[in-house]
Length: 98
Image (cartoon, rainbow, N blue to C red; front, side, top):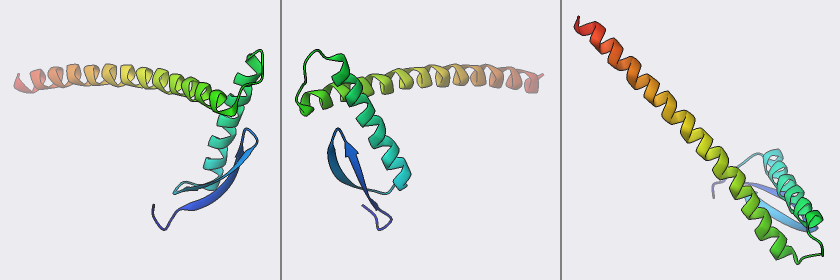
């Protein structure tokens, strides 16, 4: 990591961690709060208390699902825009050739 790294203390699911990252401290804390929130939501939905590792894996699966859904949407929009740009370029080229 670079010399611009920050050390940020965060608490996730009752455990304190010191995170070293080049990102803004508030950003790191927001991520940690989100992970903590998802883990607590998962535990609340389960019938019995689970070991933190299991809750963490389920949270990782949920967060990954959110990420892939957003990525699919982004890729779909990107492909649509690229297709429209390509069509417009063809029209412009045809007009230039006239």
